[in-house]
Each structure stands twice: as structure tokens, then as C-alpha cells.
Image 1 (cartoon, rainbow over the protein chains, first blue to last red):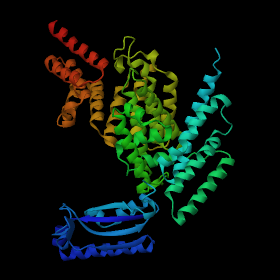
Image 2: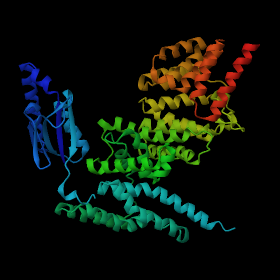
Image 3: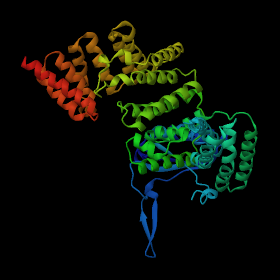
Image 4: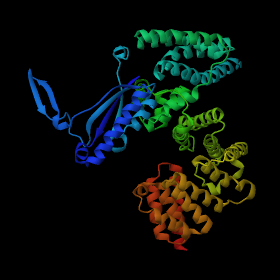
Length: 122
Length: 418
């Protein structure tokens, strides 16, 4: 099964962290990504720019409504993601627990809804 | 009167009950879908309960049921797996089921199913109901009445949990050593929750609830037989058997509540107590202590009154000391205070209760006030005791226990008047 690991963290805390600790965090993510790839579970993954760079778009009455900012203001913000291939939720949880964000923020694990299953579950 | 049809029906019921969970477990693990497996088996069981009383239980009931369920289960998977890879998978499953039908016995994979139902990704409160449904085939209405929620709510929660098993990819497997502890706890906790729901109706007035205690023991026996080397699985079964052994003694002929210390020993079930003792000894020999073994040991210490005529309160106090360390909770703290009172005097017990006084959860907790009232009465603080009894009476749900507390409260008044 494919799973998405959504990384939530406190942007402000990350931005204000001293250089040394930021370097350490980056190195930890580098090693984590490497481990995902070596074990063959890595499918995709990237970091997102902070929510101040986010734009939310909605159509209303035929007009495009563009808002600067994220969809929802939350205490912790979506900061990045990994997509992995795992046998089951236990394996996905194991990888989520190893993600550096698991000890500083939250990693949400969501199974991919495969296109072939959309209608069969109705 | 000819009772043969009834015997045949009972035999069919028993065989179906044994087979049901095994078949759900077997199919669900393969199609990774509990609801799909249940649907596939529903027709097969309806047919069995209709036919077996007439024809007798077939020699291989599971193969018989699997043959009927096969077509539907394969259809169910076919609907789900439409991709190329899915069709290959489907062919493999169909072949395996076909081979299994001719084969000897179905492997018992109920443990794997229970671990899926008690997975940490499933909401804790629905784990016990889910196990009762998946392993025993209980319908939502029966489970709902036992857990005091509406059938519609219970039905929704069960459906949601089963969808979650399928959609999040919860595995059907017994966890490995490293993670077994916590996962096994969840399974045992769910079984104990089922038992406790049934136990909380001591008068046995609500048949469904009483059955739930029996089902809890049945599940406990199942886990203990499938994991005979897990001391806590043995400990839980021992604990439930000790409690069950005293069921008849908890009420007198008039339906009044009888506290443990005043129970008639002749009403205790000696055979169950012996079985529990044996289990507890087997568990202790493994050398790993745990919550259920300790709670069973407390029960064991209470039952020694059967042999010695007195209760070993010092041993019980030590066991509660150990229990507060491994599984501290307000309930255990209250029981510990009561044991201290019996071992070292009411004043010592009261000061142990006083230490708990800050815990807000206890303000609406009947056993706290009942324990307090009893101890206050013993050191002749009559007015405070009466107030504590009033709190306990106001918080009690069971009418028999309420009557008992009211009598104790009235007894205080007489003592004061003397």
C-alpha cells in the first residue's frame, strides 16, 4: 500500500532555531531520507516553504477568490511530506516514528486512496 | 417428548460458534477486510443453522461452511480488486480457499483477527465490541445493549472501525516480541472490558449482560490456549475465573447485596477457584509479573478464607502496593486503602484515602465514598460517616447495593442513639 506521511511542525519555532540546531535537523532529515531510499520504500518526498508563501484558491459565483495564506490557521503547520510504499499500517507507523518530525511535531499517516478502489467501495 | 431436534440444534449452534470466528479470521486475513468476510459468511451460517439440525453436523463443518461462503467471498474481493495485479491476487486466494476445502483442518487464525481488532489505530472503546462481533458473531444490537449505547450508534461505530481496518491497511498478524507487550495488553483489556460489562450486572437480571461475562471468559480461554506461554493471558483468565466463582454468593436469596467479607463460602464454586489457582501458578512460574496476575493474586488471597477461615490482609496490602506501581489507578488506590485499614487499622486506611482526596475523578466515584464511610464509621466519626454514605448512596446505580448502603447508614443512626 502507498502511504503519505504528512509532516506538521511549528514554523515559527523552526525559523527561530539557532543555525547549529537547524543544521542538525537538516542532517537528520537527510539521513532519514537516505534510510527510506535504501530500504526501497521511498516514493517521493519534499519540504514545503512556510505558510507565509501559501496561497489558497476558491471559486465562488464564477469568480476566482485568491487568499494569501494557508487553508487553515493551525498551531502546527504542514511543512513537508513523504510518500512511501509499505506492507501495512504497522510498517508505515514504524517509518513515521523514525521521521525527525515525530519527536518535535506530528506525523500524520494517510493511506493513498487508489483509483481502482474509488467505485468498488461505494 | 423427542428432544433430538433440540440436541441437534445445540450441536449446530456450538459448531457454528466454534467455526464462525475461525472462518471470519481465515477469510478476513486473506481479503484484508472484516466486513467482507462477515458478509460472505452470513449466508453460509444461515444455511448451516437451518440444515444441520436435520442432517447432523457435517464431519468437517468448517470445510462445509467455507464451500458455501467461497463464492460470495470471491465475488466480494472481485468487486474490490479490479486492477491487473488484483485479479492475480484474486486467483491465488480462490485457489487457496479451494485447496483448503479439500484439506484437513482450517488453521486457527482468530488470534490474528483479535490483534487486528485491538490495533492501536482503532479507537480504544470500540475494540472490545469489535472482537465480540468478529470472533463471536454478535449483532450490533446485542453488543449495544451490553455496553449501554443505542444500537444505531454501536452499529455505526462497528462499521467505521471495520472500514478503518480495510482502508488504513491494519495487518492481521500476531505482533513480534518487541511490540507484543502493548498490543497484547490491548487484546486482554478488550476481553476484560467485555467480562466487566457482564460482571457489572451481578444479579444477572439482564441476560445479555450476564452472557457477556461468559463470553469474556470464553475469549480469555481462547487466548490462554493460543498463547499458553504468556503469563498475563493466563493471569487474566485466572482473574475472571476467581470472580466468576463467587457470582452466586454476591446476592442473598432476597436479592440483597452481600459484601465479600460476609459471603457464604458454600456458594463459591470450588472447581473454578481450583482452576484459577492452577492458572495463576502456571503464570507465576514464567517469572514476569503483571497487572492481571497481581489482581488474580488478590482474588486468590481472598479465597484462602475458604481454607483458613480468615483473609490474609497483609498479603493483600502488599499485592496492592505492587499493583499501584505497575498499573496505578484511583480504583486500585481505594482498594489499597481498604487493605491497609484491614491490616493496620481504620485510621491508617483513612489517611491513605485522604492522600487521594485531591483527585477530582473521585468526587463522583461511589466506591471512594463507600470506603470512606465504612472507615469513618469504624472510628466512630458518625456524622462524617453519614455524610459519606449519603454521597455513596446518591452515586450508586445498582438498587441492591443502594439498599445495602442505606442499611449501613441507618445502622449508624442507631449507634448514635444508643
